[in-house]
Image 1 (tube, rainbow, N blue to C red):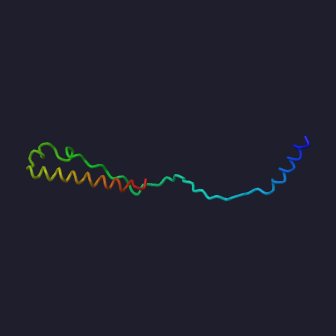
Image 2: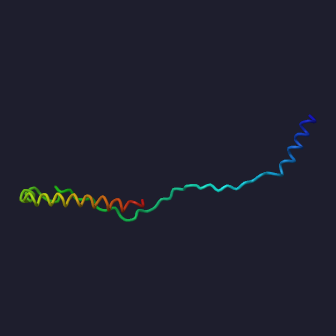
Length: 88
C-alpha cells in the first residue's frame, strides 16, 4: 500500500511538465462552385435539319459538305460543353 502511495506521488510530480507541440495539418474541404456558363444547346441531328426530299435533291458534293459541317458542329459542341462545365 505504501509503495502505491509513493508511486502516485512520484507520478503526480511529472504532471506539470507536459510537452505540447503544435502541428499544422492541411485539410481538404469540398466547395461547390457554379458552372462557368450555361450548358450549350444540343446539336440538331442532320435528319431533323434536312427532310428526305431536300436530301435527295443534293449532289454528292453537297451531301459531303453537309455531313462535314455537321461533324464540325458536333466537335465545336463538345469543346464548348467542356468549357462551360469545366468549373462545375
